[in-house]
Amino acid sequence: MAVQDQLIEILKQEDEEKASLAMKALLELPNVSDIIARHEDTDNPLLRRRIQQLASIFNRLCLGATLENVIRNNEHTAWDVFCQINVILDRQTSLVQINDLMMSVVCYDRFRCRTTEQFVDFMKETGVLVDHTEERYLTAFLPSDVLFSRIGSSLVVTALAQQAARLHNYRTTIGCYQDEICLRDSSFNVILPGRDWTIVHPVVGEFEELDKRNLAVRLLSNIFTSSILEQLHTITFTSSSLLSRVLGASG
Image (cartoon, rainbow, N blue to C red; front, side, top):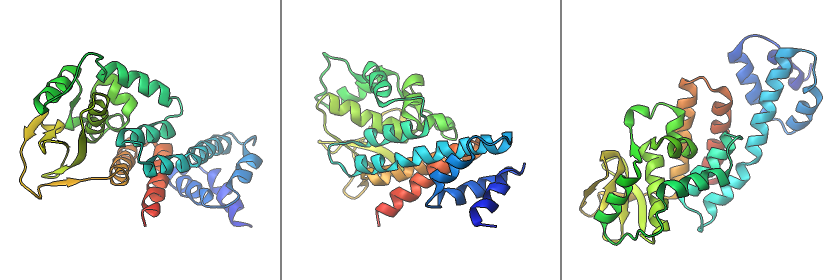
């Protein structure tokens, strides 16, 4: 029996763990699209459901090339990368929907940020905040959910804050300060969204700038962990594969 046939037989079994491993192995085969087409109309309801799940994962992974382009393109921000990951993982959400929601949250037409304090006050007025107790849930790492609830992980909230700053011509950089994700502005002040938007003045060497690939790896790692805890198998597969792709492209 061919390897792919053996894997299909495993998908017919009730064992979820073995089925998960079989799907992962199928995704690594060069003819996975042909395998999906061959079995998508099977009379076996369990196999049909798993083939549909496999097809969904495969289609999402095809969007991985787009994600890589967004990471490489200097015109795109960390927020753009996060939104691309969002729409890959949640096919019911579009970039247009996320952008419209983002503009409703952080775009005040008449507001202009000129100082660190003004920008921090502005972000506080948006009502967006970091809730560390939520960081074990997937919703804390998806921009669409964070915008809707205005509560999220420090990683996503910081990327949102940088995007808001950009809209108001206020230059910031995402980095790490004392193991916390943060922003640094052109005056070298550090803003900590995870500490209720506290402003600190670090000494040289305390702030480490993080590039988009590093941030994408951090986000995908958190999504992967959250999906395992919440038993969201499709998200687990997809985030794991995207993570491998992003890490592989960095080598």
